[in-house]
Image (cartoon, rainbow, N blue to C red; front, side, top):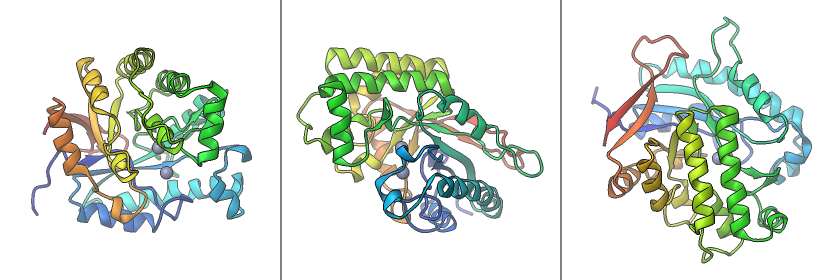
Length: 308
Ligand SMILES: [Zn+2]
Ligand SMILES: [Zn+2]
């Protein structure tokens, strides 16, 4: 077998149409794509179900889905993921994860802890790790439809205030959840694009101060930042996070890993080689990955620093 590059690890992605309204194909096909993409380790991080109807995506509502349906899907995902991780074990290290949310504000830490604590029938952990992401500010989605983005903007008055609140939510989430990975740190730039506000700066001193609070929070819990290639596919001209954030994070000692944020087979591995160049160009010479040693018991991951 050809030796796979040890840096070729994605810790965010593997969403599939089987378990997610805005993804395509089956989880099995996503893992086949990960093998073909030459991944060493592939983390699967399906979205956890949102517990109230008001948080359902428009697409889910249009399909007639409800909270019970997305919860059933997530239960099915939990079972399928362990089975598939086992069946792919000779070809790919599959890490079993999920992507946590920050809604509802009052109960998301408890909900996340319940998912994290899930066990299989044999009592062993159902998940190996999870990604903490902020897709909502004050319970309004910031990466959904243009109308939702507009609502979020109206709530805070201007993009700078919304961005500050967004980064403060990232800081709170990291403390509340203690995630292994923090997803797409500057997702707020996608919101700016949806609002037609790309020319409004997202690196003002006030925002940079909020960024520093978020990075300090991420650093203090030992989480890894997701160098997320979806930014290129979303027409943002760069991945998440932007170069100035990479420099700020690495100056503070916050590590990075890759995430392809794949939602269909063509996304799997997409942009990972460019992401490696991007990190190197911005002075980051290593990634910090989660993986499993051969014959290592499920749930017992190792964290490794790998040179790029
Ligand atoms: Zn998604
Ligand atoms: Zn996300």
